[in-house]
Amino acid sequence: MKKEKGFFITLEGGEGTGKSTQVAALAAFLEDKGLDVVVTREPGGTPEGEAIRNLFTQRTDDMEWSPMAECLLMFAARSMHIEKTIKPAMNAGKVVICDRFTDSTRAYQGYGHGLDLSDIEIIRDISIQSFAPDLTFILDMPVEIGLARAKGRLADDGTGEDRFENMALDFHNRMRDGFLDIASKHRERCVVVNAGRDIDEISKELRDVAAERLGIA
Ligand code: TMP
Image (cartoon, rainbow, N blue to C red; front, side, top):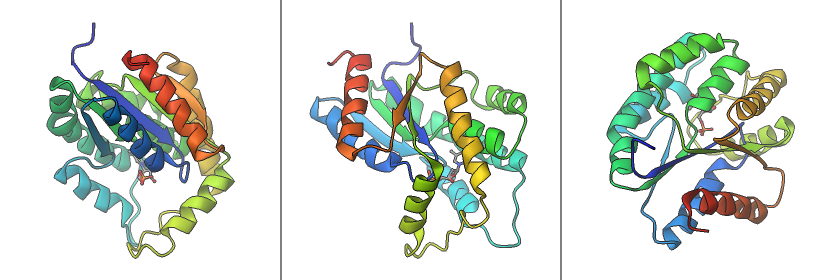
């Protein structure tokens, strides 16, 4: 029996896999079905978390966060996010949809940047214990396509973000393999979605799975 009421859905995947579009489409569908939906993201979801997001995404040339420091920042933001936003919404019976969560730390800081996966689990255990999504969609596509999309999107957005500049292709491939490995270890929770298809086809798959898991199909 679940401790919280409500339902917690996360979307995961590499850069440019279309998570944000799919988060919005899934939220609209569930709201249409009469459910109360909260959309949020990581890092972020609280003022404190958004401040950490700014630290993380708008780095200057003289900054180089270690994978451990990144991991600690992510879990600092995440613990605030769970206590201030996610749990209260779930306790009120709402469906929470979050763009990235702990699997991103595993994939980016762990599989991508080489931080020991068991160290990540120790930090997870201390900061958020066993709190985990009820359902996770992992949007999967070849990294070359995702990166080309993401670069195009950030090119003129004026935020000064240059986080793709130094990220090598093999880093992204390790991360992609990492997400697939996570999915194979958490088969109950994770659904791998082919994100290289038409947007509407992907949305339909997410709607169908979510509706079934929520018992509203
Ligand atoms: P995005 O959600 O807009 O893709 O941007 C967030 C960035 O932060 C993205 O590059 C992935 C990265 N990230 C991590 O490295 N570790 C994490 O735990 C999370 C949540 C995000």
